[in-house]
Amino acid sequence: HHSNFTTPYWWIIHSREQLSSELKILGSGSQKQVMKGYINSGMFSNNPLPVVIKAQSNAKGDAEVRRFRLLGSEVHLEILFLEYLRNEPGIPFLFGGWFDH
Image (tube, rainbow, N blue to C red; front, side):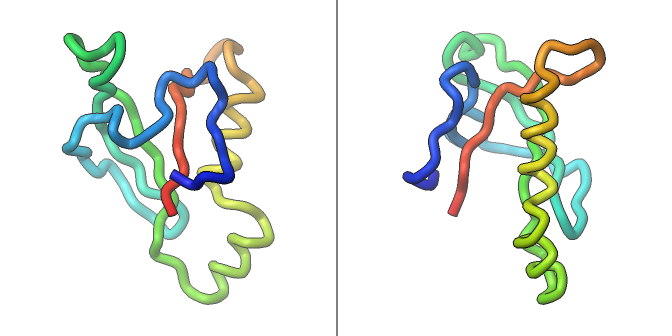
């Protein structure tokens, strides 16, 4: 977790520790990795809730790293999109997120 950033108070998930230890990789590309896991803390301690986890991929070449720095990560842009449209029809619920560095 990067100390200069905080997650919004309304998010249920604020750290990796709140998810199941085993994550199943569903797909991976040059920008992001998509996994399946479970929220297993707080109100979901007794009945884990299945969730999709998206993480920034570390597989980038030099040109991609420059593009990434200019445009922002695909995962970051997706988070902004989901937060902006929160509670709109057809928009999946964003449970939260965290920063790993």
